[in-house]
Length: 291
Image (cartoon, rainbow, N blue to C red; front, side):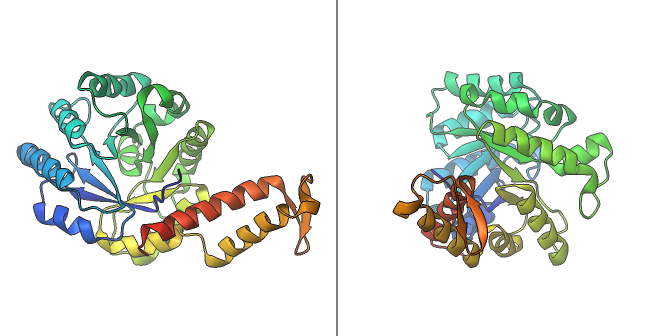
């Protein structure tokens, strides 16, 4: 099943008001955070508040992920135990660097008999994670892995690659991770854009991420949702053209043909496959009932 993931908004678990507000935001998904946005002395409170928020439901059709703390922290075991009981759509694990890390999470979920519907998302934010992206993606079936979230800020910190407009120095790493995810049928989301007051810069990075092949973008401010959704939504004319391609291939005279002429252009079966995905995404967005 194709699910819209144009925008996934980080919400600090320690902020009860933010968790309540999240129920009415037009993001495709929410990442209830226990890691970076929560101070060490607030971890327990945040854990309890997230558990209560997920149990109360009310998030509608939005995908709900819980970002747990990293495996080298003293909190991750309690985080995963809470998530296993709360049953969000998935857990997002920061600083995953190896298949062993994924196995550790999968084993813990198994030990607590967590429902198999709870999927794992891995944050790709270390040098080792980028280098091992293909191995991580290849392990997906054994470790509940649904996809990657690219983390440019931590990669920049570790590698000393500067975060500059256009991200030219990071594109080789981004494309490597996208290729790894697609080779194994995974989703991949772009990391957040920190300067939320820079509307133009944010829009440019969203468009770049879309064109590079990301399924959507993680966000740090509600004000970014509308623009992000608009940029990652297939334009109406693109959807109309996709429907035209499908209709053309469904004509009896084209049933056995690998390529046809449509509006003066040669269209192949691969274009029909791409068209079906465009239509499926557009229909799934419409079913969300929000912009």
